Amino acid sequence: MTIELPRSGPAILVVDDEPRILSALQRSLRREGYQLFTSESVQEALVLLSSRSFDLVVSDHKMPGMSGIQFLEEVARLQPDVPRLLITGWTEEIPMEELRRVGACALITKPWDDARLKATLRRALGMEPVETPTEWSSAGSSSSSQESRLR
Amino acid sequence: MEQRSIGLRQDLLRNDDSIIQNLNTAVLVVDLDGRIMSTNPPAEQILGESPAQLLGEPVARWLASSGEALVRSTLERGERFRAVESFLTLGDGARLPIGISWAPLMDADGQRYGAVATFQDLTGIKQLQNQVLQTEKLASIGQLAAGVAHEVNNPMGFIHANLFQMAEYVSDLRRVWEGVEALRKAAAQVDSEELRSVGAQLTALAEEADVDFVLSDLGKAIRESQEGSERIRHIVQDLRDFSHQDSGQRGMADVNQCVDSTASIVWPMMKHLVVLEKEYGEIPLVPGYAMQLKQVFMNLLVNAYQAIEERVGDTAETGTVRLTTRSDETGVFVTVEDTGTGIPEDRVSRIFDPFFTTKSVGNGTGLGLSTCYSIVQRHGGRIDVESTVGEGSTFQLWLPLEGSGDDD
Ligand SMILES: Nc1ncnc2c1ncn2[C@@H]1O[C@H](COP(=O)(O)OP(=O)(O)O)[C@@H](O)[C@H]1O
Ligand SMILES: [Mg+2]
Image (cartoon, each protein chain N blue to C red):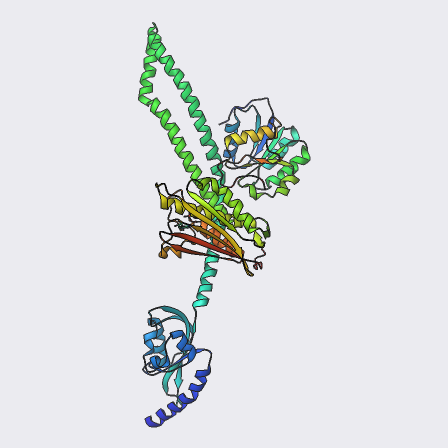
């Protein structure tokens, strides 16, 4: 099944080795007016990245072959200006310094809260002002017992 | 011959006895009938009996059946046993784990005339062993839990998102269906045979499929599934906390701060039922993982709240949770005291076991206290509980000032 997506609007590349996460994200973002490019492998994503420019790159953290952090580091080399987001099961999993080092601007936690996911993406794309004083925000599930704030 | 042997035996015994009396090891000497001929102070202390109560008595009285078999083999066949684990049955009926060795006693002619036992109280060692076992058990469950938590989280991610999306789709479809209904009613009024028959067909289809019911039940089914997925997410979170994969930074922890910030996180949840009392002492920093300590306090606070909730039920009563911190030269003490249900005595020994819970599905995974236990263990500390049913429970934590050997 493919989900019809707009052919214009900000171009977002999402990388996750779990295809069902990708299609769930496509569902969530169907009406947001983005051109969503998805890839199940880092290698494929890197090829895409060298062939065209993106407005935002979102990557899962735990993937075979290369971690999300490593991948975003590569992205930073290929397209230094593109904002980068990391998806992770648990925010504490990734040290703050690591995120800073690869210039990731926010975390998305799995499972994600729909409204917060959308807001995080808009912020990353500069379409919505950053509400918190810190540049670090996250799109975790709001009911998460451990608030997914970055430490 | 018989005469001479008895005399010699008594000789030997007299000589042996002064040695036996001065040994630090517990010793029992028995004759061929298994009656106690001699004991020494360490043995009397372990058995809790005076020499007069022991001498001449059959040793079997204090031995468990397996222990009795040993002494019989020694007396009947001259067999020797070294450091066999067994039990003593004490006067008050208590069972004491011991390690016992038996050797036959021979006279100058090589005739067996009795047996000698040395034994050791193994209570302390057994406790230590149990502790090690518990720690190992927790470690392996922790590894398993971490793996499971990771694997479950991906499917949780898309199930959660898809259910949300499905709920949106359903409400979109319901709106469309309302439009269709309006159209169907309008068609019935129109003076067109064709339209009326299409409308009638649609009515028949809708009735057959029970569309109104389907649409509302679909919404309900999705909501219930969302509840289920939320529940799974909590279990996964608990499992992951339990395995504490990311142990955070080891440093100097401000225990007062850890307790207080955790209390403010759970406060909104419990304020309608609980009066929170705080009594923080001036305490030094302790070496440890602040994140993990917060998790300990979180678990204790949630349990305290749940115990109060269970106790007050639907009444208008409230309960009290009291948090205190203090220190002495050895370390920092934290107590979490509640006026909840209390814990029945026979349950106390199990509450720290992984997966032990008395709570209903969705309210407890039984991992909270075992997580606390392993975190405290990692800090080289202790966690104890005192509880009275109907009055409440007090969990006390001790965290040493000297770092434990844990530097992994
Ligand atoms: N403060 C308390 N008061 C009464 N019972 C408690 C308290 N804390 C723990 N318990 C008992 O210990 C059990 C295990 O606790 P825990 O390991 O935190 O798991 P859970 O809370 O998920 O059941 C609880 O189910 C409850 O029976
Ligand atoms: Mg609990």
